[in-house]
Amino acid sequence: MNARAFISGVSGQTLTADERAFLREQQPWGFILFKRNVDSPAQVRDLVASLRDCIGSPDAPVLIDQEGGRVQRLGPPHWPIYPPGAVFGVLYDQSPDLGLRAARLAAALIACDLADLGVTVDCLPLADVPVSGADAVIGNRAYGTEPGKVAAIARAVADGLRQGGVLPVLKHIPGHGRATADSHLRLPVVETPRAELDRTDFAAFRPLADLPMAMTAHVVFSAIDPAQPATTSATMIADVIRGAIGFQGLLMSDDVSMNALAGSIAERTRAIFAAGCDIVLHCNGNLDEMRAVASETPLLAGAARSRAAAALAARTAPDPDFDREAGRNELEILIRRVGEMTV
Image 1: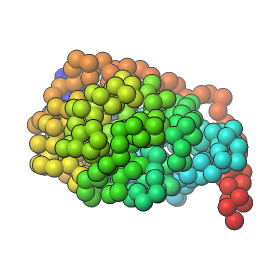
Image 2: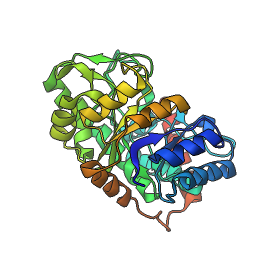
Image 3: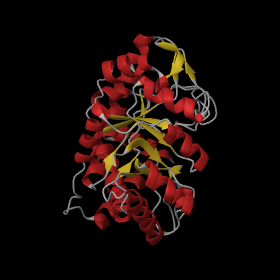
Image 4: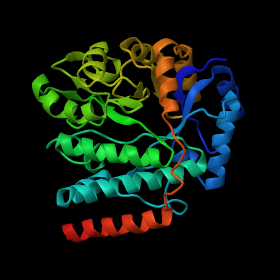
């Protein structure tokens, strides 16, 4: 059976009988894990294997948001704490080489943690460029406030993930940095002129347009489409994401269950595909919502299927020469340096 064009979460640390039946029948393209799905390394490995077994695909992508800082689904006691993105920006300001080195090292180490579990995709890097007065939902997750610097650090993070055998997902295209609301809770509206967006927000994504996957922003850019957020805006996807930014990889929505989007889950799903997204993402593990998403999701076909295949083909084996212990030691030294700078 061909995969359907959605990524599914599940409710807990093991699959229920109803979830198994749903996944076997609906055949999602991939899966995403959250803290509620995580206990120990052995448990996560078993869950990942069960998810893939349900759809009969040993290579199905399994995603996670493992950024570091406050967005980290894996943590102590089994996994280390990683710094938020802003730390790399502080170090970059002292020495671009050191900032990029730290960002790549942290991402490579994260990728090693994920690869050990069978997780093959990390929803990272961010290329959001925050501004004064914006909602704190991005905050210190961002690498900085200058688009060239943000793009450079995001590239280093993407390279580090790939070094560890994990695919990156660029987010939140075309930018969440100006949002004055948390899109988990309500719809942000950005009223900045198009020329300024091109110079700042969109400019940070443009150098990263070759990355294999990207996730949309549930943000309205009123200068371009005052009616719809980027996720459900055909204008934003065609003219900005595919056009001005030039991203041609696999485009997935941010979580369809977030409160920024209007309408029922089924209506939102239809709108996401009508706008031009390739894949819809559903995260919360609510089985009734999962069924509604699946009911409106087509089989992965045409250009979307080609982009999905190309994205998965971009994944390479982990670098056998990467020394995890040495990498952790070096990263700790670099992070300590940031602490000394900010005391």
